[in-house]
Image 1 (tube, rainbow, N blue to C red):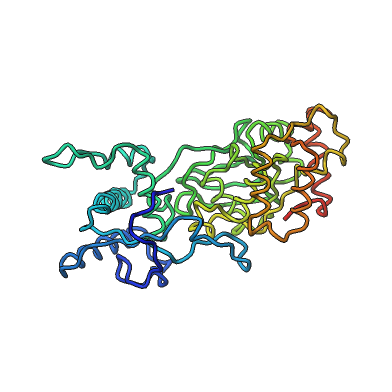
Image 2: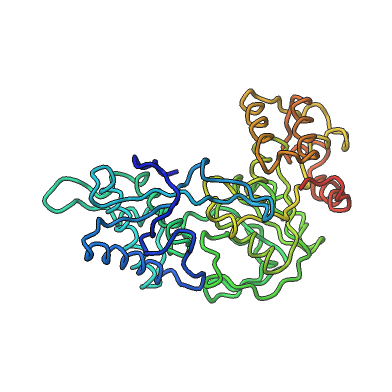
Length: 390
């Protein structure tokens, strides 16, 4: 998360850098290039009008995040911070913001994409006549890019920036990726490596025979489902995010759920981390609250692993993993989340884990036999929605 400016956070009652109130966001139809041009033009107009050039950046902090009960996802509030050029404490970040914006505009114009690391090097140079560098390291550059996302109301991917691929998919869907038609039923054991950018101009859905999406936490578990051809037997799409799913995977889950009308089921570890991953998929994250409406899937279902499954499926004591103090602390924090608060099934679930005093991984079912999770556990869960958590 970006460091807070020394200026006092305030509700945006003034025009933004584009000359409009923050509550009036640019039209959704405006493309990314137009938004970047509007940002630059606003700064030029301010300078030509003898006004201290500025950019208003929505505040990315817990104090500016809330849970919308109606939409069922985490949303960013309307607090913002003004970044001025003629301010000793803000001038460098102001210039960094405009510099990164110019690099993004060049990428958009050229139709090219760059990694976070490449953008850092594209923007890094020494200021003429000094030894001052525009950026000392990537940790200074990445938050600026996040600032641009919220200021422009654009995804990082729309700014033509990508991160390392993480996660894979296989199943009954055919799609087009950068002009190449891909049949996800014919991808061997490795599946389709989900890229960072999965926007409609890059990836288009062509044909889908799947009945649902099954998201599993880890690649090792996903591999068991692939090898057992679970996707073929149950007519679904299998996807994993390598733990905490990256933005590309979350965005793809969102698109498949909304555009293909597929229900999303999550199979995650029975521990605070698994609960948190589900929370991020379902409601969105605090750090990316400004993108929840394009990533969160409020209708997602948690089908397991449940704290009650140890008894339901007669698991042996040797699958138990004792809760650490950090697990207990994290579980209590999750219980206090507004999106879990008041949900009796979830309160009962988490309290049961705390009473048990242990946690379990999805792999625990291998203790019965290797394919128990694909042949018995998940098929059972799919037939018993009363055991799910929402």
